[in-house]
Image (cartoon, rainbow, N blue to C red):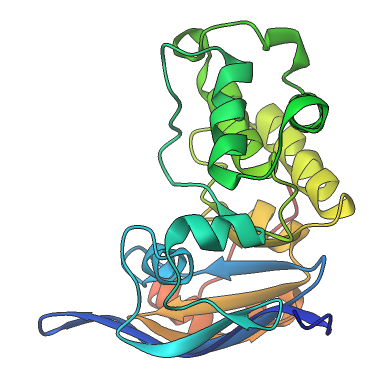
Length: 252
C-alpha cells in the first residue's frame, strides 16, 4: 500500500552523467504534501535535468532512488509515473496547435488514464476553471497568446488531480501583471491538494511563493532552507552573482 506519510516525494542520491559530464551529482531532498519547494540555481546547474530524472522524461537516472507516495518510481515508465499522480510541465510552453483548449486537456486526461464519461468531463471542466481558461475552451491552441498557452500546459498536467506538480520555469516571458496572476494560480493548485516543485529564474516569484528553497550549482545541491535564509547565504550569492552583492528577491 502507498505510504501516507508526511513526504510525497523522497529523492536520495540521484545522479546522471553524459560521458564525462556529470549533470546531476548525488542530489537528495524531500517535499511534503501540499508544500511548495522552489529550486533555484544559475543556468546549467542541473535543475531541469533533475526534473527529467524524477519524471523519466526523456531519460532516467544512472543511480539513486525516487520514492513517490512511498513507492519506488525510478525504474517505472513515464506514463505509469504520471498515472500515480506525479505530473510535470516544460520550459517551453507547448500545446497541440490544431486542437482546441478543451481537447488539449482531454489528451492530458487520456495519458493519465482511468477517467471516462462524466468523471472525465468534470475533470476537464475543473482544469479549465482552475487555470481560468473556461472562456477559451473552444479556441484553437494555435491562437492563444503566450500566457494562456502556459496555463493550458499546466491545465493539461493538472487535469489528473496530481499529488505533485513539477513546474519548470512557468514565469519566463511574462509581464508583472501575468506574474502576479501566475502566483495566485500556483497557490490555487496547492490549495486543491498538490505539492508544487517549482524551478524558476524570476527570484521574486520563487522566493515569494516557496516555503523552502533548494539551490543547485554544477549539478549538486548547494543548500536548502527558508527563502529568507537562502537569499542571504554567501554561497548562493556567489553562485548567482560571483561576488558580495545582493539578490533581488522582493516578493512579486
